[in-house]
Image 1: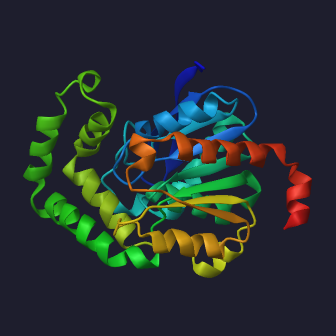
Image 2 (image 1 turned 90 degrees about the vertical axis):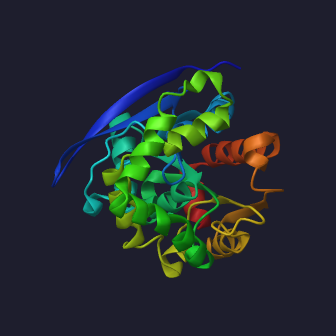
Length: 285
């Protein structure tokens, strides 16, 4: 089923100035879902899932967090943190007039969703956490993003060279996920250094004690054979969250190449969250 798609923007005032965030709305109605991207990737990576959810009557919004996609990219590491990203999601809900939403995302987006649930639990109808990054991902995360930080800080010409090579490629002539990869490589050295620095030296997720206190229902998706997003982290999160369902993906590519099963799991979960009366859900916790 075809759904309407609209691009919007909001502005946030901070200590360093005013920042612009861009988002896309899919569908309409009061059953809100917010989807967040992985680190350095654009919101467009969530487009297939957003369309699948919206086709079932959900009102879906994908957001480029600060430093990503078509949102502003300040070169100040102090503006980048999981809590700052969570504040941006709450600001988006305020901007849209959405009292509550199912909030979810991939990797970075999963961790930000957890922060939103801790920061503003009354705004979270449910959580969809794909590939959360927790205790077991520390070493792989350093190995993956340490060289990016080093290159951006001390060899900025390498980041600029990659950008000059990837930016001119028309996204419409390449496969969807190839276009997402090209968008991910379209970075500026100063902003990507600030972003990775800010996340490296801040907390990566709420503490285990805070996660155990999250009352919202959750769908947690883990992938095998993925060192940066080990299945052990997803399983641990599902065990910590009081009202979580754990789904094991068949591979790290299943939701990208063969999304039908996991799209169905996410759709059924989001619809259940909105069909359950808010008062009943509170009483159950």
